[in-house]
Image (cartoon, rainbow, N blue to C red):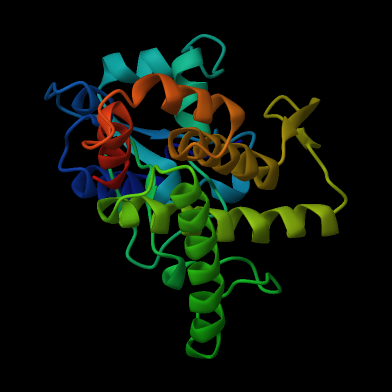
Length: 251
């Protein structure tokens, strides 16, 4: 059972509250300012004890917001809490620890740190290889968009972001296969009972897969996305709704 009363947690709690400037991060998402008094484990400490002390897994909330993300009687996450958990990829961290409103990771592939043995690692010896792979994905994506007549120079930033996401997804997918394609794993809860949970690796892949699909739809790289482009590109010279959507991605 996680110790919420020990000095170690009290020190960590104070650190996270200071990091978030004592502002509820869930309320902030909706343009509200509320005082944060609770530090919440995005990945529950009982289910994912390996992440219990990770700063990226901790978020400052008001008491009201904490009640929205976690059922105080059962200790289980609510749908809002589950949504918040899915927005975080536990295996993707950054040296700069750059977060936005709900802790969603902002990253550059050159600063990614994965477990030892992964194909993409941070370090000067790997930077050239990383750059070549990223540029290849970028150029391939650009060529496909040019063939669809959807590419514009101002779209370079979101395409580069897409390339970085693809690199992470490919590295984690390879590792997932190496570990036997495990989707769930057994864990022991605080009552001593055995339960099942999704593996952190699979949760990371789910998060990346969703974001990649959203970007591919906007770029017109899927049948659904291509249909969307044909419907929305009324103003061919200005790019129409497609340009607005991709501009938002780049922001």
